[in-house]
Image (cartoon, rainbow, N blue to C red; front, side):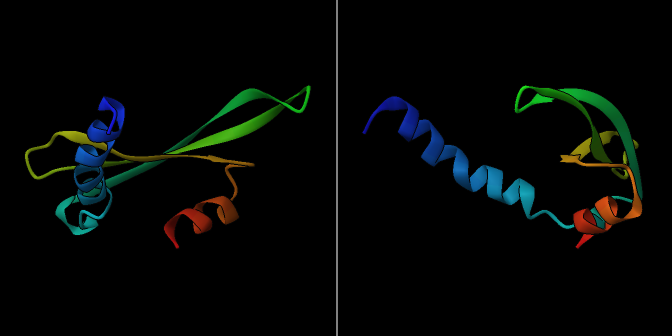
Length: 82
């Protein structure tokens, strides 16, 4: 097995534990978005980066996730929370 495969296999359980952590551990949840320009298919277009940040009981902010969406509209957020 090559070193990168060993590293990936060792990180998989850690990453899955992080992804599956309960949202209830965060007393505060902050959601926000920023619109950026991206180049896709030879064209420049606007896309939204949706970000969720949790504030833990010690008051430290932790990024819970970043998602690329077509807009900041409600449908994009609904897709994220479901």
